[in-house]
Length: 223
Image 1 (cartoon, rainbow, N blue to C red):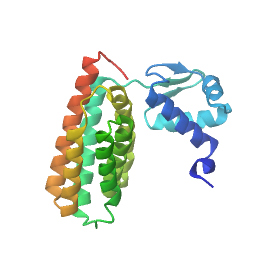
Image 2: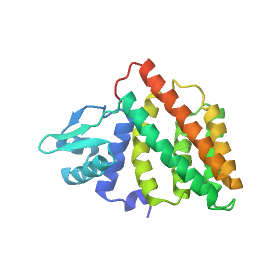
Image 3: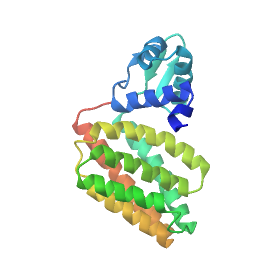
Image 4: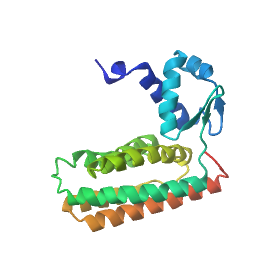
């Protein structure tokens, strides 16, 4: 049985709605009735309602009784604040991962994500790069070994992902980002917690400045 076939209808609805939000098909600030979304997904209202409650907890939408759902907008100012928190949490996770003394085998997922990012950059496949970048950051947080950081960082990363998809094809090639990721990996591999945390902190700060600047240049007050 495949993972997709083993998912409940509510889980499938949540995945589908997330994809529609991240792609922009469900635009920031837009309102939708449960019946509309259910028809769009080819499902009954019950799993859609359950999925909406999950996504509300992730900060992607707001469930409004008798009015359906509203897709939560994210402004450049929101992104700046989100990145401040995410940077602190992920940098702490990088430090903790370096202190954990992981073997090369335990860091394999992190290394492969970097290689995939570098390969995607080489063939100018921005979507593949973004997918590998997501894997890198999720694995970095997991390696930090703090479940609360995993939970909070996951929610914030969803907000970042929405804005990044809007700017993905107008940003410069992510060569510098790839270099940063490899530097963080090497610091963790060597057990240098200070270098891992500081290098990741600079990386996320630079990414924040670039993303917020692009949103402002594009005249986007919300995504």
